[in-house]
Image (cartoon, rainbow, N blue to C red; front, side, top):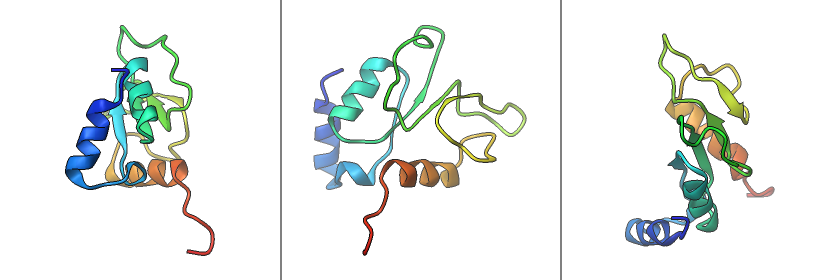
Length: 103
């Protein structure tokens, strides 16, 4: 990273377009790698990466959260969600990859 090679390889192996995926990263280099591959990305920061530039991420959180330990949203929209779920993943993906009108 930040070369997107691993993402391109994985997409090829899975037979998926980048728009069908959601990447999870924890650093600016990881985000840039996923972006270069065209994959919307959720970032969870850590003590070393908290102050990095996550511009363009679909969502930036301090962690994925738990029912008794909710996440803090640093960038993006989560509605009423307090921890990361499949429903939230679908919401984030839909916001990042809007469906084409008329489909």
